[in-house]
Length: 123
Image (tube, rainbow, N blue to C red; front, side):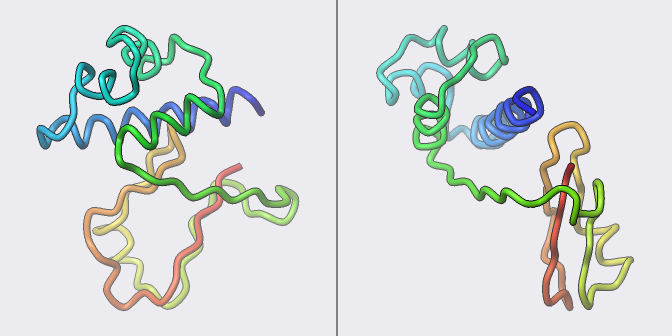
């Protein structure tokens, strides 16, 4: 469970860093300065070579001007690796949502027009 949780967190931190870096909003040097650590510490965190604490994870999220959403649920009542959509057409799902199966992240490429709700569960 630890490896599953840490790999998802690290993967999502890498994704948000890559998005902001591509937009020129952040680099390892200015992120390190904001966090008060060496650039090499940021590099180790983003590359997965550092075992991050909850405090370190929170600092990275804050430093990246990001936020998070956490859901803990009973795995026995969940459909494994299922994306359940209510009132959404299949063609909208396939053209607008990309699920990263390595990290469990849902990357939306556009609005889900006509969708009233969506639930994503990964186990």
